Image (cartoon, rainbow, N blue to C red; front, top):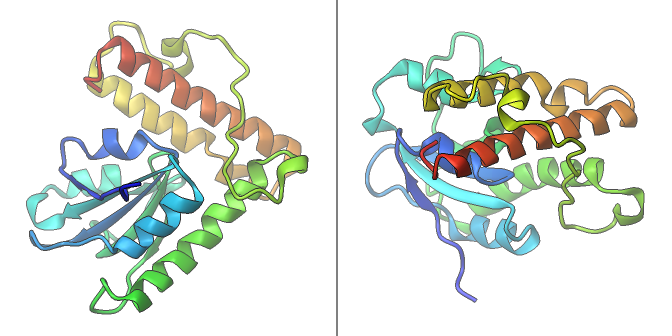
Length: 218
């Protein structure tokens, strides 16, 4: 089977692509020669099939500070106080929000660099899998997404009108994800974490439904 390849992302398609999968790993650097370490792709695509998007982003092509602040956010807000643009390196996104970052040493295509990225992100991903899997499946490596429990209108879920613009819908989706992300209640009881996870899935399904209605414009 042919190994999955990293996509070359642009400022226009970045959020759409990163949000299409549960997880995304994006390498940020400068220049056309940016490469995504194939060992990282091999590990996560093998252990979590169909859960990941892999991409590279050339920072020299994005000059608007506002774009970086808008697209590289944690569930709680900007990356770091005073940081207007992200550092180079590999970023793990979950539901479109930055979950972790690692910047391996020079020669980032080496096996040693790949092991560093894998070890750092694997801890995060496997923990999330354990948190969201049913008790009978806690020893299984594959992620199990919680089922949505509502048939609400997708526009109602995102809190927008049906005639809202594509940009308004994108912003509403990002805001809802930020407000309802399970990380905000990670310190609370399993029951509350489960509710938060289901809400996040419902928001994602609503956004996907609207995208389908609008034939992928979002």
